[in-house]
Image (tube, rainbow, N blue to C red; front, side):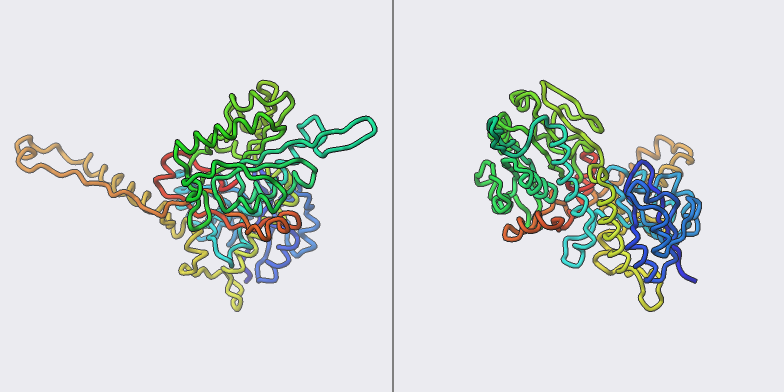
Length: 462
């Protein structure tokens, strides 16, 4: 009997984990695909299209018989109660800073894979959800900016006079930043960009924009071997802020995209900086969900401060859900294909596979990802030790004094520290890639528990 693969309707999320194209291929892999009624409506996919592709339309309760569940967001505690033990759940689980949610996944007995942790290797690029979604966020950020900006973006020479081109400044040149540069250039704006990684200077130039940065010795060493951004010193940040402050005063639109997994979004733009911008200027903060790059940005709202509009839209990729779902569904399909035994046409997980090692979060009722398992293991003995200790009678003072008991020393959990933003494509191909198709930059690796405890983190790069 074919294994059941279920695609539910998301809660407060317009995207969906499947498309008619991927349903057809999942069916060919041997799955009996069930799509919850209305799951694709917000992504402009009616139920009829899923049926035509080979899926059955079901209800939320069908999760209980699903062997595989493909989602966009992490399932809630209420949803997990309906999942059967041993089910494979694949989604963007956003685990950092959400320890209780990770434990809930383990307690539900599901094998959960978090797509944000996909490793930066060639075979995994087609599965890179951070790149596919950040690429669209960069595009939509420019569209949102143009919508809020009360003037034209391109230069226009008319009989009535010349309209100057809008000046757009992109802060952070990862996947989202590159696409924002390309989109703003297509609309005719004069574009500048900044980043702490020296390698992106050529990529920015290749897209027709000008690069801006304090190019000192620290700047030259500001990129990891994996191509991610390092966190800069306070001294460098102060110098960069002074340079940026003067530049922002002359801009019409500023788009910020800086995120460091496992840490709060770095503050890039202060009120003092944008107070010098002319009325009607626009700031788009793509990091607003994790604290924001812009002082005064409010998650989910458009505010106006000193005559400047600050746009804090949530889930920017979801604002173009039809396209975002199309790409995300392909990311999921590509990963599922690596988990399927082609002969038996069933899920067969190879826990030695590098993709599985990097992305599996829970399995067999336990948290198994190294960045979380050590912390979970450290808390378990402490909890179990507390129970017998509480039940024992107090020892006589004399005995206690005669034989002092050493308190156990907790070992610090260790893991590889993760860098920040994803690296962009090489300069040589950046212009072509950004203009013709989504920029394919691999996703960031997971940060260490130390970074996790410092503050809540985000869903990768904006």
